[in-house]
Amino acid sequence: MKSYIFPVLRPAAQSAPSMPALRGQQALHIAGIDVLTRASASRIPRAFDPVADHALTLPPAPVCGLALDRPRIMGIVNVTPDSFSDGGRFSTIGTALEQARNLIAQGADILDIGGESTRPGAQDVPVADEIARTAPLIRALREDGVTQPISIDTRKAAVASAALEAGASFVNDVSALTWDRDLAQVVAQAQVPICLMHAQGTPQTMQNDPKYDDVRMDVHDWLVQAIARAMDAGIARKRIIIDPGIGFGKTTEHNLALVRDLALLHMTGCAILLGASRKRFIGQISGVHDAIDRVAGSLAVALAGASAGAQILRVHDVEQTRQALSLWQALNMTDGKEQV
Image (cartoon, rainbow, N blue to C red; front, side):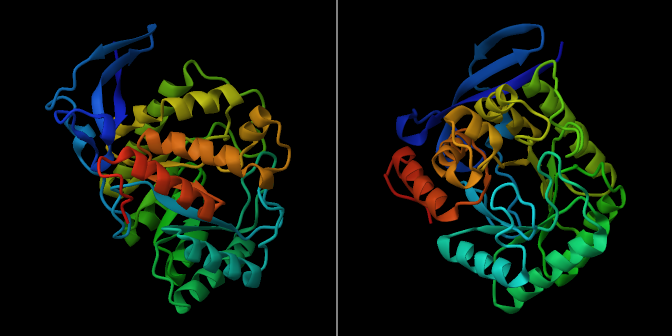
C-alpha cells in the first residue's frame, strides 16, 4: 500500500543538534517522520532516516538566482478589472506600475503579474487583452531597473511568450499545463521555472460542490503527475514549483487540511508555493466579508505556511507579511536574528 511521508517539524530554537534542517531552511528542523496511508486515519511515527528521507534535507534549486533558504514573498499585481482581492484598483498600466514599485519597496522578493482573474465564476480573457495588460507592465518594470524575479500568472502559451520576451523570469500556471498544451513547450524552450498549481475544475465550475477522497493525498498525487507531465515536456525538475491551489475547487475544510499538512508535499523535491492571501475561506472563518480587510487572517495562514516549510508565499500585503516573517524567523532561529 502506498505511504505518504510527512516530516514533523520544529523551530531550530527548540531542536536537538541531531535534527537536520528542512531542505536548507535553517529556521526549521526535522524532529521525526509520520507515515500516512489512505487505509488509516492514524499517523505512524518513526525516526528520521538519513537515507530514505534524504530528499527532505536537499534544498530546492534557487528561483532565478533567488535562494530558497527562508520563506520568500511573492507580491501580487492583478492588472484586471474584476480581481476578487482589490476590485480592479490596479487595472491600468499606470496604477499597476505604481503598485509594483510599492511592493518592491515593501520587500517583495518576487512580483507576480496577472492579466486574467481566475476567481470563482471569472470569465476567460482574450489572449490579446491579456498580453496588452501584462507585457507592457513587465517591460516598464525592467526599464525602471527592477531586478527581482517577475512571474507571469497565465494559463496561455502566447501570453507567457510575450511576457518572457518583455522580461518575465518564470511562469505561474494555475492549470498546471492542462489548459494550453503549448505552454509546456514555451517554458521548456525558454528554460525558465514554472509553478504548477492544483485545481479541480475551471473558474466557472470549481466551487460547484468539490469532492475528494482525501484532499491532502489527492492533491499530492495530482501534483506528482503534473510534475511528471512537465518533465516529459522537457522541463527540468529543478525548475518546477508546486502549489496546492488553495480555493481552487476546495471547501473551507479542504483548504484547512491542505494548509495544516502542507509539509506532505516536500518529498516531491520541488519548492512549494502557498497562495492563500485574502481568500474566501479566511472570510468564512473570520466573518470578514470584504477581501481587502482579511489582512490579519492572511498573515495567520502565511505563518502557518512558513511553519510547514513553504518556500514562497504569494501575498497581497507585502509589508505586513514581511514584518510578520521577520518576527517568525527571529523566534525560530537559535541566534534570534532574522536572515536577510
